[in-house]
Image: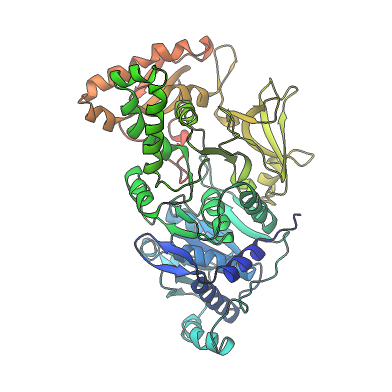
Length: 551
């Protein structure tokens, strides 16, 4: 166990940053740290009056918002266990998760609640609004009476008002369960990942020591808080530093995000590759692909001037005041990675999984290596399950402070996820370089078998294909024992260049010949299929591969 404690981080941050802005909804509600403290104190009075004990489960469903953040911190700060649930799940799955998790209370967004049948929810004591704190359903009875007297109880406890010296959170040891995360996954039903306080504190500690944020800095939160990546690095870490976090509260399209960047001017940006790649393809590639520009970029001195101008423009696109852009959740396209490095754009790469809360490895932009996902964080050991971890690909195995306790009420799945000597099986395949940087080749379950039994890593083929013109997204699958690439075209770029769909599809299908020049013969693509609709994705924007596999 590490010495640092998550609730100590929160308590000290609230006490030290009492008058600073803490949480805001984009163009909406805003709270100072002292406002958050008062709301947390009232939540705790509710929990006490309702008979909630430390270790009891409290679920949260909703899009990113100040209310979501307050509910989470009030729950964990009381010593109860949070159950953040992604709103993308179907109502049927959510009914199951609420019952499976043994949740006693549910906080849910007002716009989501009408989609649920209160009579089908089992095991809960009550349901409350994330936005207004109002009672939406009372299964146990007496909750409205409790709500009606919360303000009176608060005044009795703090007659002169709550001060920063009086604000306290529960004293919870690091080995205690903090959170159960039901992963989105791509196959089967989700499993509840049990993370203790130690795992969350280890993630926050690493971020505090390695990512550039200070009290008063600004964060734009648009990754789903129900997912461990967004939760750890857009809420827990910046809140522990006294930052001002603004929640987008809208669907994070590149256009919406870019507008928000220009207004909020965040000091640190966290994103999944898909969003950054769309900005790169729509904002940068059209500029550098023009014939005249390609000639100028080959001219010494002039190309440096052009790269500096592109860097300045790209910096402005992201608000102009960020210190670093951290990319994680999936592989970043090699062309974008190489271009960002060439112009000196400050981007960092991280790798993680929900079972580690989530961070596994990281490299700042000054340490970046092409194709790598950084080095193991200081609280983890990582090894490659192969006889030669530098030259031979194997499964990435993990052990240390960040690793989950197991899957909630699922001993079989827990046992299957660890080796006999206690290493967590990541399911990811990779290797080290001589300096300990990790290179991921793909997912174990995604491997395709070539005609003579060779291992084909579809992610490697996809990374080459998405760098080709007019390819927005790609997915490589096996169809009729032949390797097929599914491609979703960049329709916006084609439209701006006045290219009709028939011509567009011919251009994309013609990429196959060039693509295969860069692939071993056994992994050559036999056919390219056009996807007219965008691929269906998980909440963290990973393509749901299982929907496109051969039936």
